[in-house]
Picture 1 (tube, rainbow, N blue to C red):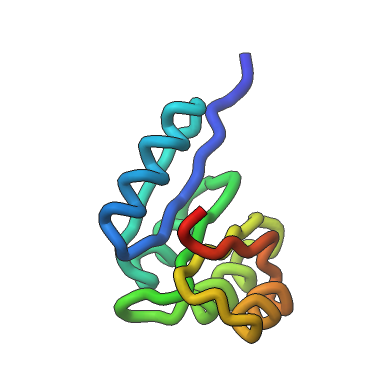
Picture 2 (cartoon, helix red, strand yellow):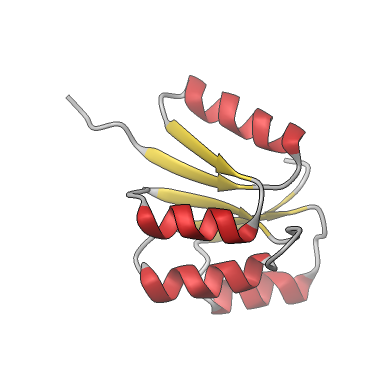
Length: 107
């Protein structure tokens, strides 16, 4: 039997968080959510996740800052960046700091 894959979603938009949680859970993933960068970072570092889905624009910490801190603690964890602002500089920065991939909302 395959172990359940765990995903941490760090997204402040409640409707987007809900959609991601429901869609991923339907595919068999165990989904945990956080609405702020600080909370999401703490939970991602302390937890055992297979993937982190991270929004760039968060109410407290910038997503790129969360990415940098997370990669210092857990360099091997894949991080998928999502954002409503499809800005090339964000894409370049995210990839430079170890993001696995980058998606622009809506997707």
